[in-house]
Image (cartoon, rainbow, N blue to C red; front, side):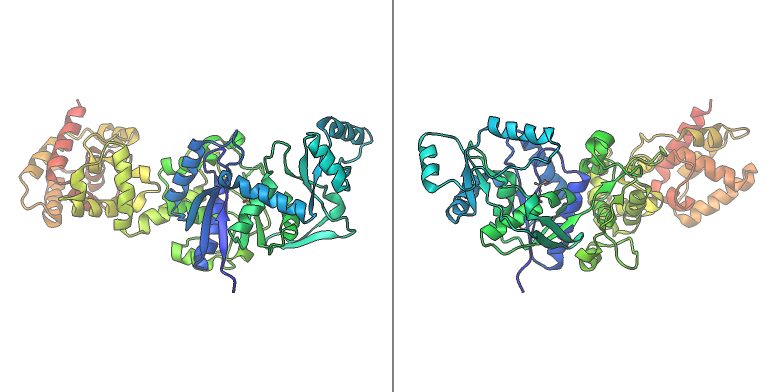
Length: 492
Ligand code: GLU
């Protein structure tokens, strides 16, 4: 069997976006499944629109998602000579010709077609110039472009797209399209095909917008005597209103970095994006990397457009709730050692990182992460809902404070007494803490719920959290008593 070679070929005109990432993911999965080559090629021939920042952003986005490539990044602009050489080869083999029609002539013909309400197509005026005439006009310095000599046949270019099925484009509907501009610049359809041929790409998995180029590219392949790759075009991603996901409509939320900045785990993102337009027969939704690589197949790519609830109406969600749920699944279930670098980065960015968390306090840190993540959805929850575990400057949830520390007959004058008792408690362990609290409830005639809520709020800033005693053990006696005293003063 022929080795599989796939590529991701972004044009660096903006950051890595949802659609590009999904294309990259499908190519990567396909390559990894076949244990074959995944090439990264930056299609930067549009010098005016390509930027260094965009290249940087694309590379960083792919790295963050964990989509490693085997070759590249290659740059299309490095191969301009090869693109021109291919055009020369096509001229020599008679598959292409030089066209001397001026812009004015072509505009005039286009305008005439418009008036007659006909679709304009180049009429092939230069298709059959004699070699002598070509030579003469060239020698006279007339500028020319190079066009492909599309076979004039009554049938159609036919190919089977792995997603869209049999596609036909009648030859008569394909004009003799341009391969090289008058200034010598090769056109994108040519450059893209020539690069894929050189790199031995066997499967072209790309967005649906590439479909318009495919018949032309097939003609280029055939004219260059190159074997055809398999094509698989991916349908669009829409928002719930059925509008195409776009920067104009959805702003930063189309950018992969938005999700990174909002505390999503890269694999959760890969898992979610794969489900946009791809499904297994058993509708399974959570796939670890090995499972996904194994399960992926081109036949599972859906022809129907997929829907990403990119901007849910409910302000509780900063993105599709399904994505948040998938993220929560990984956040809560992945080995805590694997989660460690992500939590570290999150704390670091929030100024809450302490190097002791990866030296003397590492065991404590991992235990704490394992304890508190149970209710978390995104990494930023560690620095908001979980801030009290890592820093003394943690936010107090206002509703919780009002309800549990200030509410009617809530004023816990006893907070200071409890702090005193905790100060002298030895040893400080589950058993002793439980016994102390039981005694304390009795002596102060308090209901357990009241004490738990008040202490939890004073100590963590939140009214909810993991098991109460576990929380206390995790925060430790010094911080507990300090915070209880602070809350007691706070009362006055
Ligand atoms: N550079 C093209 C794009 O970013 C890719 C086309 C292709 O994959 O063939 O849309």
